[in-house]
Image (cartoon, rainbow, N blue to C red; front, side, top):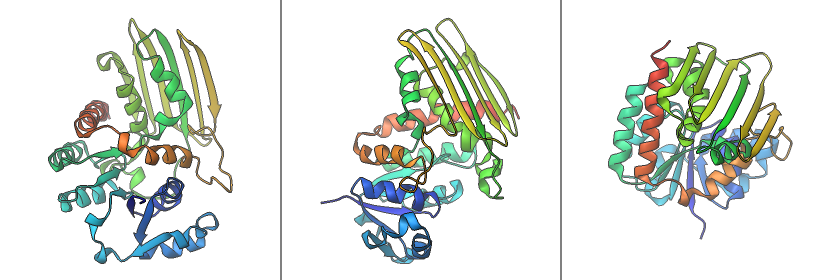
Length: 289
């Protein structure tokens, strides 16, 4: 029997999570008010007959094995706090909270739930990320240059106090990389402003140089030189493919891998420990601005 998944949140919840969940054989339910959005999207309209729709007030949360929260950080906080009795898996989004304080408090709530959660750090499913991770204990040099085009929409993703901005919304992906690959946090040299983030690490074992900027032309480039060889990749996005009619969002293949392996994600203790490390790094950087 397929596991039951409830998706809460329009936008990426619908054009990202929903098609990825269909490919991984989840039984998907989402809110009735999203039906028109799905009908109007050519690449999603064909999935309508496989989706169950429900009014938000009629949701019986405990019939689901997992819930996707694809909403703003504050809405995510509100959901978790209001549904502490739900014992299924939570697929949460980055950043966990809109501020360092609210994120720390939410981690306390998640820890008390005693049921698992995970965040979609989708870079970890990319070949370039795996190449860096395989070198983390050796002498290696990593250079990443990520250029992001400015959003035309005036929404929370541009508001630092709402959990947006270049650090909390975009840079958190790379903070996860730093934590996963066990870079010495004490060796980091950080340059941070409204539209740029630079992180460098130079020590006896490895060199790291990350540049994240807002630019009129999007792009992603990585160079890795390690004991096992060299790796170079350049493209329009970190996800290695351009949108197509079949895959309109380049994150979908990574989401498929993420959702299909949900039962092997970090357990609660490991997930909490990782998020607290990322949070400490986020706090250190945010205090610079």
